Length: 238
Image (cartoon, rainbow, N blue to C red; front, side, top):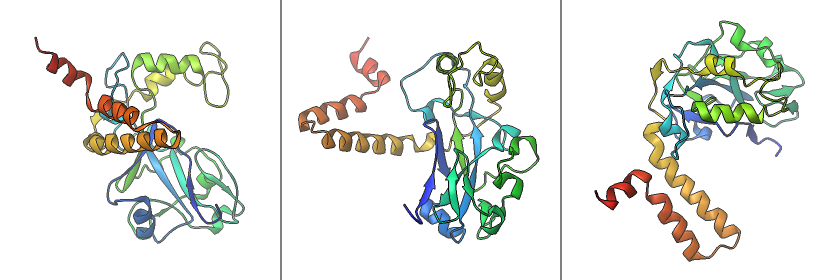
């Protein structure tokens, strides 16, 4: 994957482009920097206590204000050149961090140079740098509903599983309170939910076809996806 762009995102993180139709278009708008770091936008529980079977981007639209410190953390996309020696979940580890073009995506075509301290691993949440959300953001549905977060507490973190009652547990009730941000509403991702469903169904069909499922089974899965719980109840009548 030499010279490819690489990005590490979690299953509850969605890169949302506001001014461009593709990541390639965004990179070209900033004249293809070595690294681009996108800030989080932390979404809360929307006051929901239980799981519901719908897209995350549709279920949760309440989030932190733009300038809130929880939004200062970022995830990065980087070109995999000889400068890159390793990477973590948030940024690449490069030989000479100050020698490459590493930007936050704002004010194209130059962008905002990411300070050296953050290139080396400092936590931006403890500073006044950013966030920059005008061009793109990573919607981070970090808590979801209260019951889903309780399940997350039981699983433990991605690196280890010390248990919900351990003093080393990251996902605890204080974490929920800190990140259950519902001050304002951001509907941009929710407004694109129909496209997300179409793409999800396309990927599902490709997966089944790759694994040899017959056409009738794929049609059945597609039909199931087209019938929401609400429309099924309405079609049943009084």
